[in-house]
Image (cartoon, rainbow, N blue to C red; front, side, top):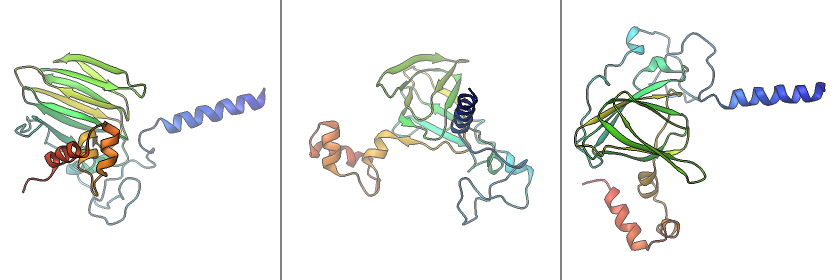
Length: 215
């Protein structure tokens, strides 16, 4: 009985440890020294701190959405707010023009929860069983995207839309699926993508050309 109890406690400890998005902090604060050449799991702490290390005014106003996707993500993470280092949280604002898309992507280090500021969005995520979980959300609604799963948001309305996103990581990371596969450096071999998508290498090259930097 004692062995079973010990195994159960060990399992619970491991579960608690593994579900944490970022490591637990060991001090009151550790303002990131973004200029330090030292690289650790996070950022080293700087000696002199100030109120501005915990402040960012960049998500109060709509971002410009005049790009190919018609959407703009403005992050409020540790790279913008050094005081978030070791705190395990961050925000972002996402703005969408009519027809705008935040294309399929993942956040490898965080779960995301969005709160709709204005407009209406069609959102969804895909499970590892290839099941699409989707819903139309409107102003005042909240929707969650589980950590690591592919997800998207699309503004199919006739007016702009915007959300505030919250993450349980100081730096959730973003991998856009199309960009990751077709614009990697060095490039993913054409024959790999052709076989994966069951298309020809000429079609792969055509898609890659659309992601090439504009000269």
